[in-house]
Image 1: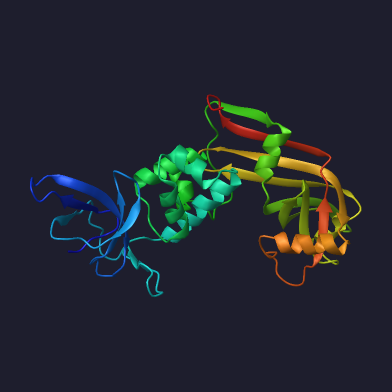
Image 2 (image 1 turned 120 degrees about the vertical axis):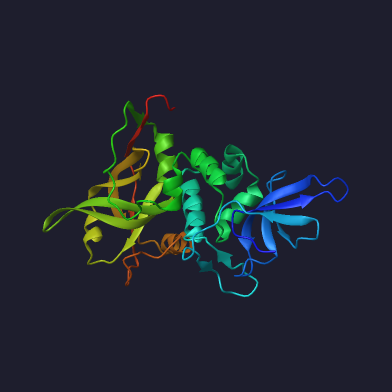
Amino acid sequence: MRAQLGDQLIVESPSTGVTKRDGEIVGIHHSDGTPPYDVRWSDTDEVTLVYPGPDAHVRHIEHRPAGQEEQVGDSPGRPRLVGAPDSGGIGRRIAAERRQQGLSRAETARRARMAPDYLAYLEERPVAPSLASLIRLASALGTSVEGLRGGGADLPPGQGQALLHPQLRDLDPDECRARLSTHGVGRVAVSTPDGPAVLPVNYEVIDDAIAFRTAPDSAPAAAVGTEVAFEVDHVDETMSQGWSVLAVGPAQVVTEPDTVRRLAELAHSEPWAGGEREMWVSIQPVRLTGRRISPADQE
């Protein structure tokens, strides 16, 4: 028995010869396509490890052309997946989009009509989900299948066509805070000796304050002691929609040792720019505004 990702595993009833159970093969543990398989059962949406018996057979959904197969995962006990280019990236993008929307796994799974355990499986394992699963997830997250697959990730935003009937709506403060989320990459606008500058920084949101790490002699450090603007946004190039949030407020260097220690402990990532960046700058928003562009018939 040999299978590829996306094939169906059919288990027949030995007494009647009819289908007893079926599911999608979402994980393959051997590069030659032999069992065991990770199967997502159609009746429960659960994923289990299956060693097919004599009452089971594989229904091949499609035959991939030679040269399009790729093996992912080399550690012992981890599935070696065939024909799943960038499948791990799909899981990371699903998780990132879910967190960006402030959604729990349980709520996302409910919206996508799938089991929470299966969503966790997709996010944490290098698995290629079916097109049907991707369509449901894209709808639940308000994005596109192409976006979850990473299509156009390296292109500058804003090249897509405008919506036929766009709706530009102001976001209230609670919606702004939800989209600002807890961390990510944003842009801080500062005045420097060379003129105005808009600089990307890794940020955290703790106790409603925006905080980022930098070096004392860096351009973002020019924010200290001034009123600055801080902006985050999200653009769905495929759907020609998105949102932006702007926070304005005074920026101060964080000097209290306990606060510095807490910021360091709660930080989700190191600054992408690298190097010694141990100076924390805090922005306390006094004005928080945002806008969202979406189809006119979408709430």
